[in-house]
Length: 237
Image (cartoon, rainbow, N blue to C red; front, side, top):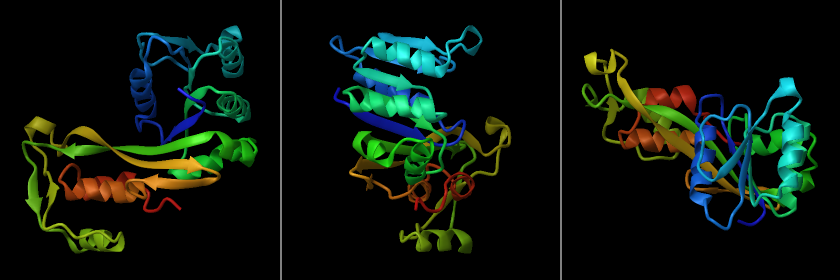
């Protein structure tokens, strides 16, 4: 793993930590040292040294991060960049050859970059260290027992047209049944806006926004347009 920073953004409950855990699982190798600083540790991962934050005993995020860097890990996961101290330490670590994984509360990828800068990290340092930004949401899947097809409503048709997408012949909805406790949904699926950061710009890899990613999932019948309206911001700019 080479240096740089990968940031996952989204609201509480969007699955950000789960995504970082999946990245750690992919990176596990005998020759790599993996360490995380979390508040709290949500799940134990084999071969990863996970350090819990304990404010009461004085092991704050800043203290735990500085201790972690003294161990010189190849990969450092920081549960959340929540203030200027953790953001600065994360960027400095990324600048000195560590691969840093972290999360930030932001609606979309470009906003995540702004949020890091607002924490007091100089923009040149953000540009020099940030490699990838992932914005994500979890959308509910229609219940397989009561899902049914319908022609797009005028509002749904307009949403696809405004996004520059082909209007699908049919979309999926679910009225609810005993299998889904009348909710109309079972399970969830992730939608992602992925941007490769380079020299201060952030080029999209795949859908240009969560809104587009969500509508594409709805067109495939993997979620409903109502879920996209509820959870995906319309633009990323």
